[in-house]
Length: 161
Image 1 (tube, rainbow, N blue to C red):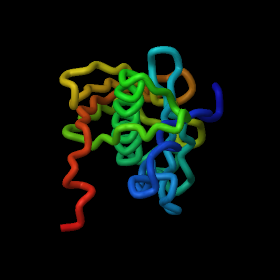
Image 2 (image 1 turned 90 degrees about the horizontal axis):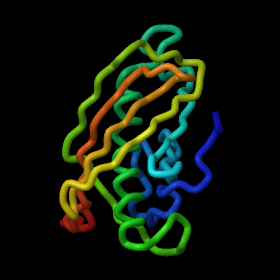
Image 3 (image 1 turned 90 degrees about the vertical axis):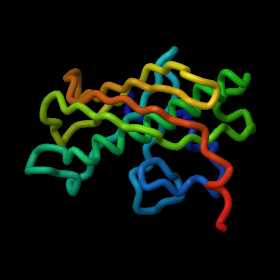
């Protein structure tokens, strides 16, 4: 498996919106999830750290949920950015999304010692609302699946009032 995503939408988020614990590149304590295209699907690759355990040898479910969540909002940003005629790294600020709903199904225990691959399929529901179905694999084994409904971030998120 390719070890990292080379062109990630999170790299193009403006500094004011790059602080998410899951995918914010400026959050020094965060996970730094990075989401990019592979054909018509999206992918995020992440190797859990030793402290991300539920029980020795297996990943904590909250990390899996966080991976699916950030993968979903990143995938929605990729899709709308592409729909608007842009690509990652073209110098145009991408749209930013927030999670409206998150559903996670744990299929089997996820080992803590291998890279995880989140693969997303995107469906537009409304011009400002997207649904992303994600599968999370450890090696070739499906460990979790989830659904994120992501909405374009409201302008009120930029106000400190």
